[in-house]
Length: 139
Image (tube, rainbow, N blue to C red; front, side, top):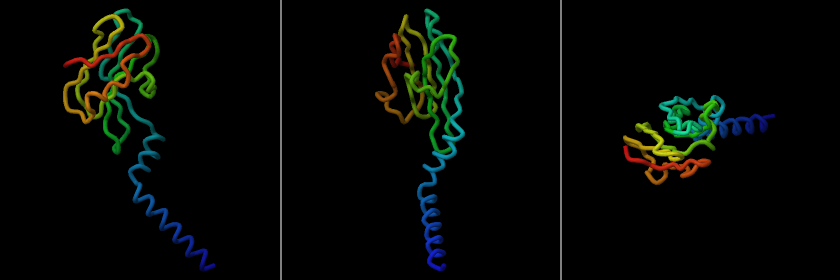
């Protein structure tokens, strides 16, 4: 009986140690993914032909993750879904100002102004979404 009690105490101590060592990743997994992220639309721009809508939004997944600003493209008439990462064309960490504009038929220009930890060459997630070319513009 005493051996079982010792094993139980050791197991409990190991569990407590794991929770303290990995508290932030565990909180991220448990709280963020069970509750989800919030998405605040910052601006929208309709394509010249009216087929697409580009949406700049801020993604907030809680205190243990940084704010992320994202630009996504969707078909006109479809409801905005910030969780649909297949529509994401531009992603940047922190909260710089994002300007989106259609610079021509089938060409979306995304420009930022302000600090971000994301290097410029890593911000574009894709340079083409369906038949839309995505470029980084100057603010």
